[in-house]
Image (cartoon, rainbow, N blue to C red):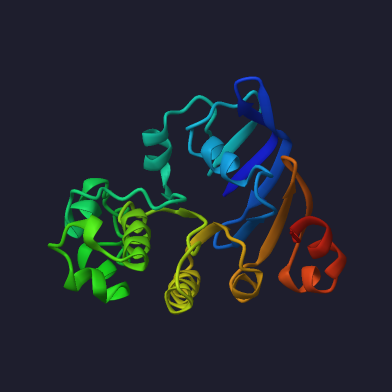
Length: 234
């Protein structure tokens, strides 16, 4: 569904991604993992059209994304849960969900709607008229995920969706992602919690200095602890 090949990108005179390449298949849950500063969030920005390519290409469901504006990429069916949530604090929960909502494809009986996201996150339903800035950090993260789902994405990208959250809330988020996976949602997740990801992810991709240096299943990663020490340890 998503394919990056030979991607170079960076900021001003600094290059961050070097011939980056990986694929995410339909109904697959894939990860990007690595130490801070290795290019994970930059990869997300490139995929979403927020940072231009210097070389290489990105394809989504057969469409080339190079040069495409972020709103057009979103309309193709990519939903983003950005690092730091970036909810609209002055809007209510319901207004946040409706602001960027996109209807489901015709004939899709499982499309996301207000009622369905409130089933997934009942606390958002209870607080539907409340200003988003007054929510707890965990509730704001749930809102960011629900807002992305309201675009009815074919691919859902989550950038550090559990960072800084209490353990109980993190468990709720991982349970939500497990449910989405069981329903066939394609997901690309960036996170540091390898143990929680192990039950969710089909394939890991380790980034080191803007390149994919290893990819494989969680079981294969567990069998090679030297990889964790080399590329993921502090």
